[in-house]
Amino acid sequence: MDRRRFLALAGAAAAVPLVGGAGGRTAAGMAATRNRNRDAYVLRFGYRDTPLAGYPTHLRGYARGRGVPTLPGPVLSTAPGRTLEVLLRNELPRGVMPPHVVPPGLDPHNNPHAFDTTNLHVHGLQTIPHLFRPIGSDDPDAHLIGVEPGQSFRYRFPIPDDHPAGFYFYHPHVHGSTASQVMSGAAGGIVVRGDLDRVPEIAAAREVLLVVNSIYLHGLADRPGTYGFEPVPFMPPTHGGFTPAGFHVLTVNGRGVLAVSPPAPAAAARRALAADRDAWEAFCRLQPAAATDVGPTAEAPAVQLPPPVLRMQPGEVVRVRILNGGAIDYLPIVATDGDAFWIAHDGVAFAEPERLGRTLPQALGLAPANRSEILLRAPDRAGSFTIQALANTEGMVPFGGCDLLQVVVSGRRKPMRIPERLPRPVREYPLIRPAEVVQRREFTFDVTKPFPSLILGTGFTLDGESYEDGRILARPRIGTSEEWTFENTSTMGHPVHVHVNCMQVVDKPAMQALLCDVIWVPAGQSRTIRMRFKQWTGKTVMHCHILPHEDQGMMTNIIIRK
Image 1 (cartoon, one colour):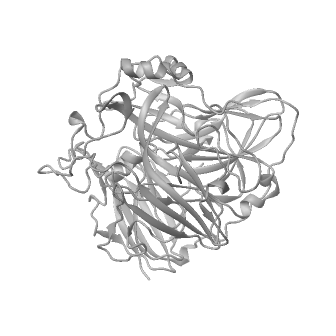
Image 2 (cartoon, helix red, strand yellow):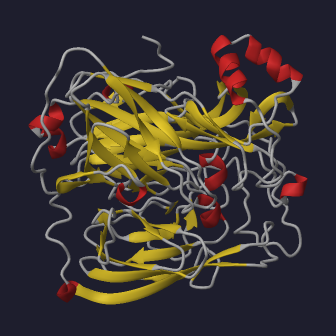
């Protein structure tokens, strides 16, 4: 079987198969150290050189142990009651980026910068606050952890005994460079094993992870014929800044499935591609068009590339975990045939499976950083269908839609069941009642033009202000519950993410999960949630997970008080 087209490993309960890409190993086999109470990994952050959708690329990413960086990053695995330990090593070359000299009149915090400084955020895990130094600090003036090239940092994330089993992920979170590193592909999945995995119908199903990344590329001046994402700090696009002329490629487990505004490679790149038949054939399918001046627009040409292939038997059920690991795209997911049942969102299982439709109103909506799990049942006949992300205008830029996965159905019938009930995540239940709410707060997300202190001329603000290290907008107390309303007064949607605790949605629209850690707030609308501050204290953050918005100011600090 062609590894580039399909890689799904079935086996023991601890196995985490992936479709396509270089990361198709079991999560259990990737732990450097594994004992009764600890799952320990070494993650190396550095460059990878690989063809992507037919283009030679030089991009940042994660490697496990002594391996090479992969797209997406290696899958990490843990379980309730354990400690997830990660030794992060920044192996980017030292002295490559120019000094961070801030031109007069520019905001030193909220313009993209610090592109070679990194750290680690385990997104969605309900663990100790870990963005600021020292970990768990409740000092308002505590600074973000920054791991410079050549440095290492050891993280220990205690996983509560009642933590929900589900799908989470990790990515860098240095304010100023979060977007540039994630848009280079620096993100990977985390699987927490638990009671959901022991449901008989789920345990019997093969498991597939789909990690979607959106990779931004432009020609590299110091590597002719090679593409990457290397903006210059505090410089506008016309001088090589954050959004230089380029294009982007949507990938599924490292395989390009959509190219938007792909340029024609230089002669050197064409020669390099010709040496790799698969890469050359992919390039020839692109029918390259001219690059736009600032990246994708509504008119930007987009080319669908062949997606990875999943083979199923008639009537078979497969468990599909999907992560939107991109920085800007809103992805409404549907299956064009078969039966798709939504069973979990942002790591939290539902009380019972929910059948998905095949049109936009009934699609599974994944904002940037959302994760969902579905049970996919193949039809009782041979044939093929696709898992699609539908066209929409919800995200930062219009998305034209594409196929994420091709499903080929053949062979002997294999009837399998969908469970009627799912185990209730005890950490989130009982739900928060109005009488438990001790404080109600409102937060406003807005976009302002002109905004001369930012290189792109647009300000992304939270309660009318850009991010500052020592500004604290909320100080909830441990052991209490609060109700927060997110008001979006701008003309674009914002996915709001609050670190540490799960959110319970009060004004739940159709196709919005009741429990989540990222909630989509459409343009001109509001959403109200409740949170129980159950266990962890310290300084943490809330922000928009369209990461260019976060890097340019749409974030604030929160201190959970003892």
